[in-house]
Image (cartoon, rainbow, N blue to C red):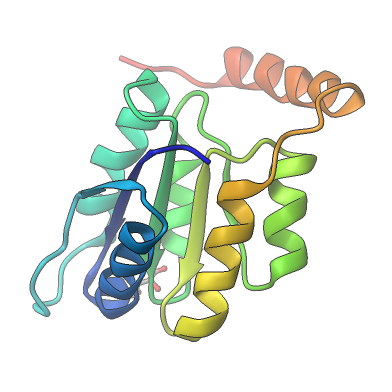
Length: 153
Ligand code: RB5
């Protein structure tokens, strides 16, 4: 399991974020809490972008993003080069997002998934390895598309 995990949320995901931070510490991970740390309404890109940027640059291997549905955070994170963000609400998808998609950002909807299930999803995601092989070939094709269409200033 990766030892250093970054996690960020907006106000709608904060309660789940804080619970998952406790859980990550129980699992022995080093957690980088990138906010938000108040219940005041905020804009999720302001918290998702710094995390996705760190994953994109390779500074951090894996991150977790949480907003109300998880949809905004996943749309945002997938704009960053090299980020493969998976919006997950069940344990099977958590496993497959690692085995087949090598997801490096896990996104959860704090208003969709309960704490118990979210913990199971997170543990499965963190402990499942990418299978490589034909799946790497498919990811390479996504990278080709990314290199063709993504313009970074
Ligand atoms: C905030 O109300 C909500 O829009 C946000 O948390 C997220 O669900 C967006 O996709």
